[in-house]
View 1 (tube, protein in one colour):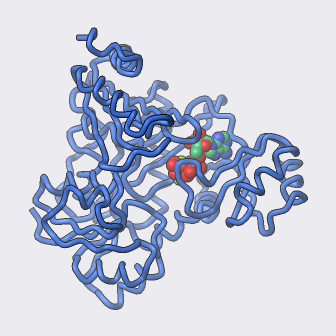
View 2 (cartoon, protein in one colour):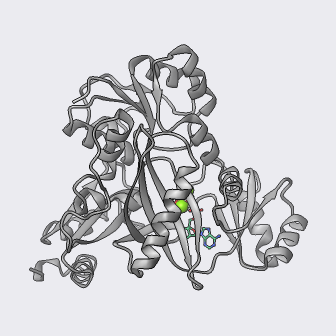
Length: 388
Ligand code: ATP
Ligand code: MG
Ligand code: MG
């Protein structure tokens, strides 16, 4: 389909699913990550690079072997990516290093969105974290509020909910040694998300609006379509397109937002890559988010629209499979239950089982949300065999 080699910084589950989509189109991919990482396990076509996406020489080694670079994670060394433009003028990098730079620091990302007139939960920079500083923020924002690491955050691991003045010391102990900012609490009714694709010629396409449910800060379920009115779906799609429109470069973006009681929508954060809230697209849409990303960054033909489900009646729920808290590989029991259920697909990422680690996901497809929920219920309660 395309003889160019796509280099991917990061070889976790997102990289693995990009590789799967690329394989179907005969597109070669080369991975930079540790040996045996999930994406490398399923790709023996080229020799991969062992090393880190935050290490200059490893990134340079990857660039030397590839025509196009992309990322499965935003925590990469942007200065090195920028410097590659001089060394390899023909190399294409998507998302653009400027976009990754704006997004990888969550406070910088928020300022950028505010400057572009996009509504977000109010942020407050913290120059020197101390009990006094956090008390002042408590007076300004009221409690609870969020203390967030500006960089290297994922799955809520850089977040702390400051519930009251009393919890400030614990918050400082948890996050005190990282660059921080605070965020006003957003008392949302639901969390919504939209995957947006930008082609090399700058056209934006949106996937359906979905609803995500987090448990302990980690995405737990994703309902597609979101169970909100058509007008809110349209508003969410327009907001997501406007927000992504402010970041240059081709590729896919995951836009997370809060739907507030008064109908307002606030952007939570944007990921410049495939996203957990887009995993449902593998089974619910004709073109998955991973294939859309590959097509976008290679300038391959795009469909007129990504916003349709495979069939109009498609309703999907994605369940994240997290490492069992008590038994190594205990989560596989749930996956086996799911395999017995019609219209359900199981994806495992080839990772070593650890408590709360994202080990895989399950897509439940049905012709109504009630049916999807009933299948999901049967899977999690262990009654899948009685379901037809
Ligand atoms: P991800 O894995 O999505 O990258 P992350 O570590 O970047 O996660 P956030 O997206 O900032 O974390 O927050 C995780 C979750 O915490 C959100 O999805 C939401 O449920 C909750 N949350 C974050 N910010 C706020 C806020 N200002 N008000 C209320 N809840 C919030
Ligand atoms: Mg994040
Ligand atoms: Mg998030």
